[in-house]
Image (cartoon, rainbow, N blue to C red; front, side, top):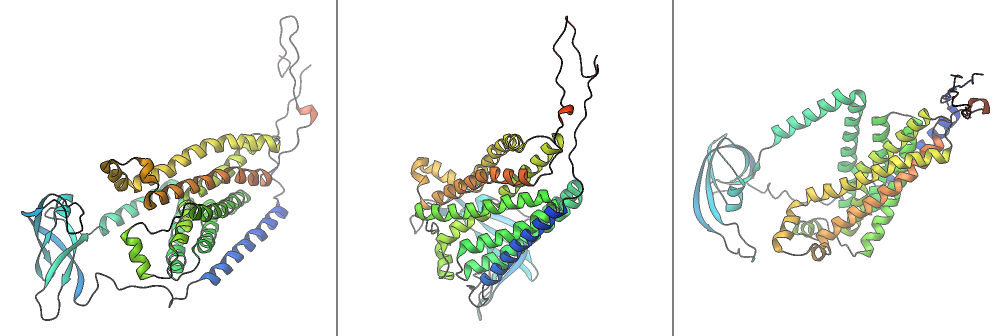
Length: 417
């Protein structure tokens, strides 16, 4: 006798309006609290530290120029400088360039010249014209506006072509992120607001906007949002504790000292903890969205899978993602800190010795805290997704097929074959 065998499907309907309404109320409440906190922490413009542009003093302007001549000369560069630091050995260069008012000339030190400059290069130079004195020029930097704009346009076009509307909305999310950072987070740091609450509030607003813009308004996106928000909170708490435990002050370079002099109310140790939250947002977002999507796909493939089995299956995917994401954090630091790592190698100092310095230690703590927050976010997001994912219809006993044991060397198949 033939056995009947029916395939189950995910029961999506009727649409889970009750759950959708509940989640909408929760998300709107979180957004309202975050916006209210942002308003409360919004810095007074009069308290935001400002300093005079070092390249904008009286009689100093920045002008564009095109290099027309490069003439090297011996400037006795080498040995030690006046501060005891080693100097680059080699020739300096006398540079001729065209500007709007005619011709400009200036000298490059050995380090700048060795880095590379040639006729035809577009550069920015300082035009120094003190009252009653002759005009002089100094090299400022290369002009990179055109190539940077071209790369940004290329990136945007490719994102939209490949990801279409989601890519376009992801670009809008980038704009929202930059707006939140430049208009709220950074000014609040400079105004002396507590950095960690500012970072958590700013990150919450950014993630709510970015996730729904890039991935659409859905229960699946909401489950990823919940996991992301918990990850942000955990990273913030761990960052604060790790910063205090490792005695990170945030003062590791001349730029840090200059910043304190410019903004005496800034809490640099707090900024270190805050950057641990902000630095991990991208990878955290990637992991939580992937885990939510994995749960939804697994539920669609096996509607009758129990919650525990669904969680375990999604976590097998999550473990692979954790491994690759942790590598991403390490590689990102290694790439951005290549100059420091090269100096460590050149000084013939052990990594263990250099790792305890403020500059290297800060990056190590930032990477480890970000990785811990990332690892914890995976099971948390998976749990939210399993809880909120569509439930398949229970498999009825008649739906389960158990093959009959072989008889006389023959084997009965599902259709009695």
